[in-house]
Every structure is written in structure tokens, then in C-alpha cells.
Length: 64
Image (tube, rainbow, N blue to C red; front, side, top):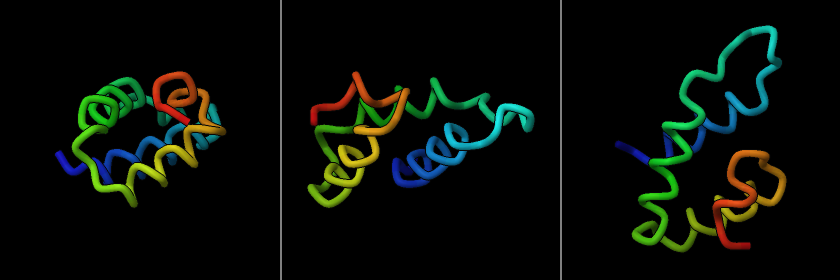
């Protein structure tokens, strides 16, 4: 799976209003991102870390 696409979908789902009920893949996407994290390029790691600082899902899962 393309981690960048999963990251984008995670951001969208996490930021989407709850009324639209678009949250079905948050756990799956965050698990794949965490599993692939060590093998990612530094640019993507930095972006993930930056987003994780404000993310309820990734905040406790990624290093800051």
C-alpha cells in the first residue's frame, strides 16, 4: 500500500466532521503508517511527525 495515500486519507478522515461518518479506515491506515514508518524517507517522516503533534490518532504512536 502507498503510505502517502494512507496518510492523506487518515488526515481527511480525522478532520472530517463526524456527521459525514467518514472514519472507517482510521485504525487500518494508522496501523499501516506505524508499521512502515522506519522504512520511509526522511521527508515523509518529518511530515508525519509534524502532523502527529496535532493528531489524536498518531500523537502517541510516532516519535516527536
